Image (tube, rainbow, N blue to C red):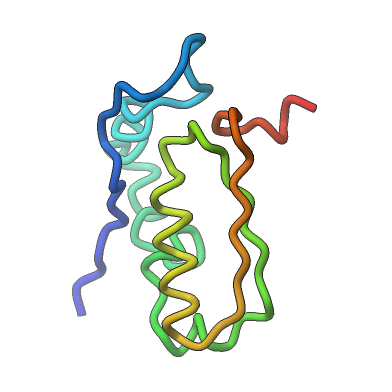
Length: 106
């Protein structure tokens, strides 16, 4: 079995307001290319989009908080859909006007 790699749905966007978001798609691509971090993009415990149905169906109810201007928001939405399709209970809350990492700024 060849491990899959997590993919970012929204690689480029001009929809983000100024000032720029805390993390940008270019930084995400750079981090993916670092050899030391590569194993994390193939591990379902670090990249839950890679988890199989068996693992996702065993999760407790999940509350995912996303930011409107987060380049990873599409991944959060995809994860929630995948969990639901496996019979899991998940709630997605998107905070308007916020960027990636906003919870660290309070």
